[in-house]
Length: 243
Image (cartoon, rainbow, N blue to C red; front, side, top):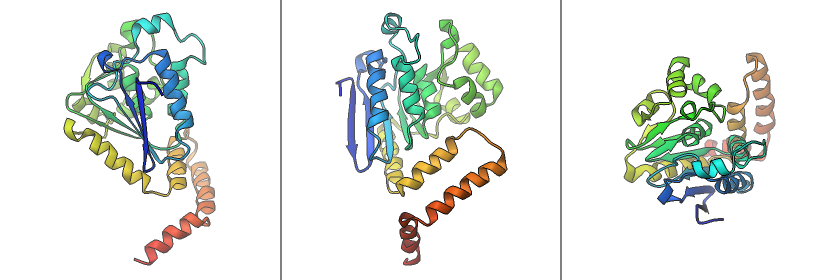
């Protein structure tokens, strides 16, 4: 673990704190590699992840490092991070303050809960850098906001504020800066109190690629039948019966 990314595990929660404050948490290839390793190897015994950056979430790519280490292969650190975050089996909660530039916004589309302050500023400036959208944002953003709003965000590359992000379903709620981390932590604690296997399988179902309705019912039914007969479900049901 480097000083630029701080980890803490406590009560079933993994907290990942970006800590390059002097550069507004601009991300280097080395930081992407470390984040990818965290999401691959630090979640086997936890129920929720919180990712935050203090007074600035992240300014996106460190452009000088990006030019020195362009992601030209599929195993580039930034792509490894994208895969690791999108495949994280447990819920991921983002606590956003200040700037969320580029991947700082597109990663939010892969989080399960996003809390942001009124001071937060979001932008996906790929068009301005003569590149295309990343991290499946060309798919996920139109699904979330509708095509016309996604076109504004991705084809104009303009900044937008927390109220806009809330209106279009990119964040869950706007929080006071003083309560931002507490809000994220409260959600993480609720998640950590849930049966972990059900939490993981529920997220997996919600994150599946679409299939015909009847097929999804069959998939859920098969999974439900197996889980309801397991000791964890029996214990949860008996606990309710004893109330």
